[in-house]
Amino acid sequence: MNIQSVINREVFAPRDERILVAVEVKRRKRKKVPFLPTGGKGEYMTYICLSVTNKRPAQLLITKVKQFGGSAPFTRRSQWSVEQLRQVDGIDPNKDCPEFDLVFDNAFDQWVASSAAEKCIFIQIMYHACQTYWEGKERVPGGLGSPAGDQQKDQRASPGAQVSPGSQGGQRGGPGAQARRKSTVGPRPRQTEFVNCQSKLTGDACTVNLVIYRCKVFFNRMKKGMVSKQSSPQAGAGHRASPSGQRPPGGSMASVVQRASQALQERGERLGRAEDKTVDLMHKAQQFADTAHKLALKYSN
Image (cartoon, rainbow, N blue to C red; front, side, top):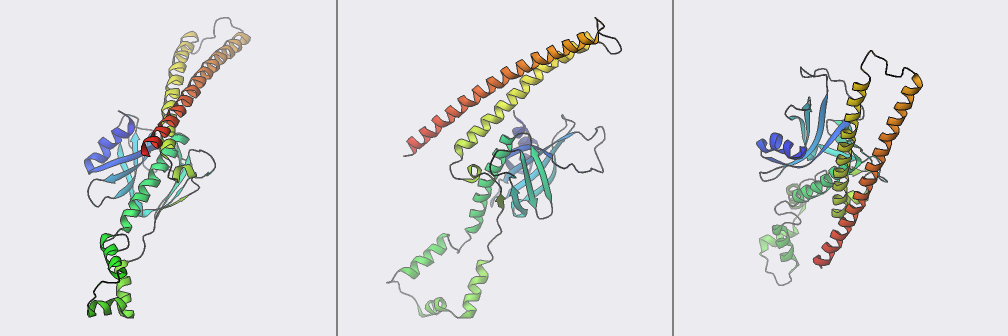
């Protein structure tokens, strides 16, 4: 079970919410925390989550979730509605980068995601969720785009329609009637602004990009796991070969430097092979995504 599923089960499911996407982040400018839970040195992991309520009308929420100590349960720290989210800043519209900013009515956070691909997935899903949410908010009963509003528009447009004198006078109306109609419509809601975001994240043809970014995230995690497994045996062997407080056998500093450089060279070669395997897997994922996109276009027509 991945982290997103665990967060959804522990934090959002008990509150009758459903998580859409979660991204692991760190602050670009670390804040001073006056209080930290006992039993820790301030080490924690932070996740920014986008969720939606199961009850109708659905509410779109942005939640900050933390996990202290690495094994403790996830804790909900802060939560905002999408109406409070004023701006999403992607920092660089020309290339993938892990940095992004979230501007709320009462807060401003500068984040760095664990990878550029995870940040791109988060912004892409958030953008389309916000668009869907605001489009639903604009479809008010009797307003433009609603069935009642369309029916009234068709009645006014049909030349043979019979209109009673009272309704005809109401349609012509004076200043008072026009003011009443304007008051029932209400102001247009302020939508979330997305700035400095790549067009491939906010465009219509984004399904293939989402598949590619998910593949990149998967391969990055595989690469980190391979590097950690390769480095841990070396660390154990180094501690066994040269215990603390004792000089290594051979005694000369030159031999120590030579062994260290050889170990670094071998590690670099292993990392290079892992990088080559990762690039090869990414190319295969790209080919798979292209084929899936062509098949989708073929069967959609």
